[in-house]
View 1: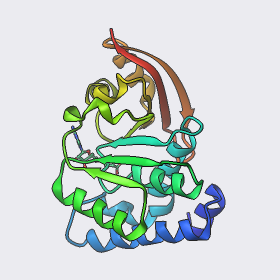
View 2 (view 1 turned 45 degrees about the horizontal axis):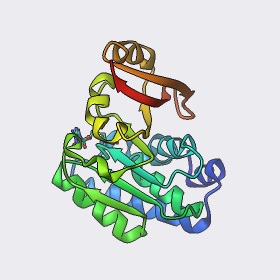
View 3 (view 1 turned 180 degrees about the vertical axis):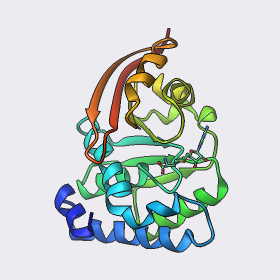
View 4 (view 1 turned 45 degrees about the vertical axis):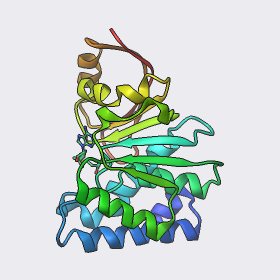
Amino acid sequence: MSQAAFQAATDVSRETLQKFVIWERLLNDWSAHTNLVARSTLPDFWERHALDSWQVFEAGPDGAARWADIGSGAGFPGLAIALGLADRGVADAQVYLVESIGKKAAFLREVVKETGAPATILCQRAETLDPALAVDVVTARAVAALPKLLTLCDPLLKTDATGLFLKGARHGEELTEARKYWTFDATVIPSRTGDGAILKLKNVAHV
Ligand SMILES: C[S@@+](CC[C@H](N)C(=O)[O-])C[C@H]1O[C@@H](n2cnc3c(N)ncnc32)[C@H](O)[C@@H]1O
């Protein structure tokens, strides 16, 4: 997918597109010395990373302004969500990018500084997050299988947040496994970028 195809698929402004371009440039530069994403995926930034992340923003509840992205890595999907919230003019937008590895958190700080994305980096383990963050939505991509992921996200989900989790083709098996330990209402949204799905979970609680 080209940059132009990404813009057509998302309808972002030219200004927002430039922010994604800055992010891609920094990702390529930093990848020379820091392991941020699989290097083989760098040429496919626009579909594999940018659009894959953008679809999580699109799946969010209307007007949701406060988000947390767990295990954000190089910012997927959380930074794309922050750029989306700014692009759409959502009031009081704030995305917490939670990443426990210092070098990755430093990369996130640099991208946020260069793009002005409405995001705050929390360099800590998700299990230690303060429920008082009171976010509307919790997101994650490629962090852990669903049963463990719900444990990591529990401090935030217990304040009634919606979970939006990008999963691969075996998402059905993950849902079945997670139901042994958790109760929730799930909606499965087919992915725009492959054979996976976004799992949208509400009312998450321990069995
Ligand atoms: C495979 S990477 C995925 C990164 C990004 N979400 C993506 O899809 O490109 C998983 C990331 O989650 C972070 N991580 C794993 N467990 C975590 C935890 N308990 N708290 C915070 N970050 C965590 C790791 O440091 C790593 O950067």
